[in-house]
Length: 132
Image 1 (cartoon, rainbow, N blue to C red):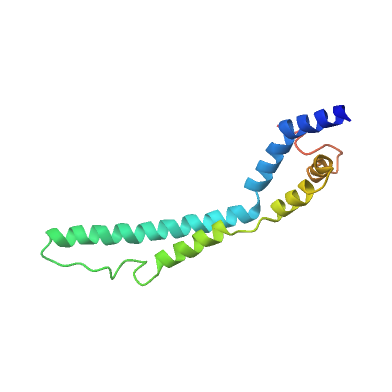
Image 2 (image 1 turned 90 degrees about the vertical axis):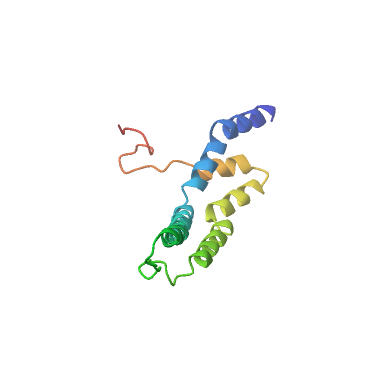
């Protein structure tokens, strides 16, 4: 019994935490949500920078320029950024639900091991072997 606890603790320390972190960070939902958030932040920054530059130019120029040519002129970039931030902060990751299900069980380490079993390809090699 004590040997099993030691082995489970060792597996969690050596592999489990890394598997959980990698699976969470590489979830497709994270990629899509972060990409959307970055795009909206870039658009909001573009509009703020354009407006600030326009104000500086107009302060020193006899000719008054407008934001007519700004691509974000009539776009609520701040609202879109706020919506993208909310989507990021409230995103659901199915992999986290699987982790929670495993961790709720008494044999959580065994369940996590099963969740992270390497897939076998057609040649019988585990994922990552024989490459490079």
